[in-house]
Length: 294
Image (tube, rainbow, N blue to C red; front, side, top):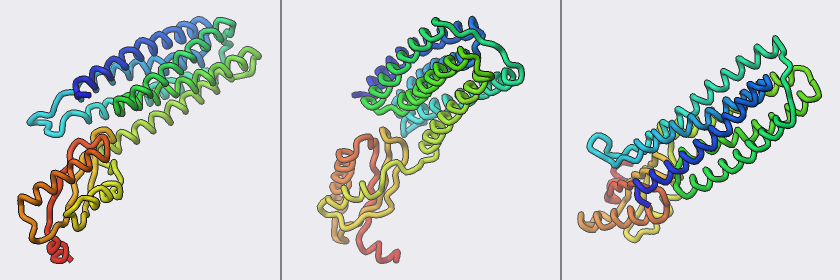
């Protein structure tokens, strides 16, 4: 699939999930406000942030789909990772708001209303969330998209959150004291944990953490005829957009033309053996050079 085709596919997925997430959020917020149930309102805010992250993702994937140019010779794919970072900060903000509201409600308890409609709406939104996570993860695997994967993790928290809300509603129905506030704080904790995971994964990409094990590349390179040894293997980027550079030792008598051909073979074999590699830089050295350095 071409870069532009991938961008369009990811954008379609984000538009679909945006519509579903905001439908779910609207139902939860209206129900939470009508019943004065803070745990449902908190869940609604979380679902609303899901939709907001979809919009951020749409902007990020649109920019990341631009081809490489003079100013960005490595392309624009990291903008997709920046979008994931922004999603994590949205989650932190939502969690802070929930903690604040829960603390106030804990000090000044309110008696929320729980009825059959509460369980019906929350059950429906639970099923919608399951579908969204399944849909995004399936497409994330097919399109090799970090953005869709991180967004699916965001929505996955909604499943656990909504399940906890259903449990809380049972407790609230039986008038267990302050259960509404306690479960709201628990929801905030889940959101913070998710945000930290997304931020960690994104920072690994932005800080050029090694993305492919050197042993995997070394095995491919050593199998190429003419290679005497290889070292200084480095990788960076993302699983679906990895950059590799390495030093390869060859016989002293090998000509420039032969070295060039060998480098092309190595690049081809690495790309063929490791999906997602975007570029390979091979530095050819004579075997004697290794002994000189020692």
